[in-house]
Length: 192
Length: 215
Image (cartoon, rainbow over all chains, first blue to last red; front, side, top):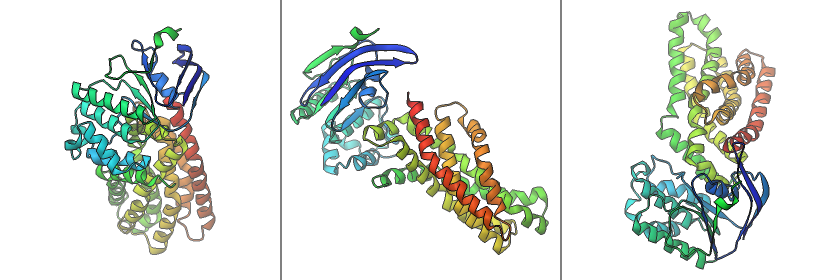
């Protein structure tokens, strides 16, 4: 589904990592590890097509969903309305988004304005959006940040569900997540 | 443009709740009510210069919301989310431009009516002003989105946006105000041409600016 071929990343004139190759197929999950600044987020943004590769290429077939530090939810809107914009763009029905919201324990909060939500609740909202997006490949950037134990296990269950449905996941995280990853790479080994 | 209406409607809703839709209206009416105090209540002088004054006010009103057109969405990751869903920067800029025009073009044309009355403009001149605004406001909306994209992420973006917009806005102003005189159909055609040009290049130029800002 996803092939990353001999990709290098240059940020601000500095080479962050070089000659990285990896492949993720349907039903597989990949954990990208490494200390801060090693290029985990940049790698996800390159896979998502938001950053150009300095060399090499990313081949990807299907649809993808990105959950990173930017919630992209309008702060003044109620959570339901803020998410409805994206479910309309995704063509997801209400049932799917309601299901994802209740699995992440957000059902009682749908009428609360986004700016009133805590960091963890916002994180859960954008994980729920990712889960409801119907995309084949999930790119999760530090999905465990700000989540409590119950939400972490909900996230693990959601990832297992996605893989059993033939999806694929690439996660950048320095936290341990309750999910048995198919594979993991240490990005520090590709640092130049 | 199919599939973009939820996004455009959302932009308009945000503009409405943030007071962005009222700002250009109030601004135009403020200028129109202050102008006679500054130049004196001579009806002939007001009628001769008022139309041009309203064009200047319309131009500045278009630049008022520049800081919230592109930068907040770029920072909140809204564009990232649209891009990973296969939308292009150019289409995002086009949607932004459409929403910005709907949010300020027609309201401005409405506000121009009481403003014209305050400046004692006669009926024929008001009609030509309205036709000019109908042709020129898309250009002003395009210009707003273009400079917003170019200055997105910079500090004191508003002041810089004004400086950037000025040279591109001068043709709109010349032909818009020039079209106020009777028998100035050529100016209207030039206004339409410059408007078409700005509307056509803005999605491409603003899209390129947004792509460059992301790296």
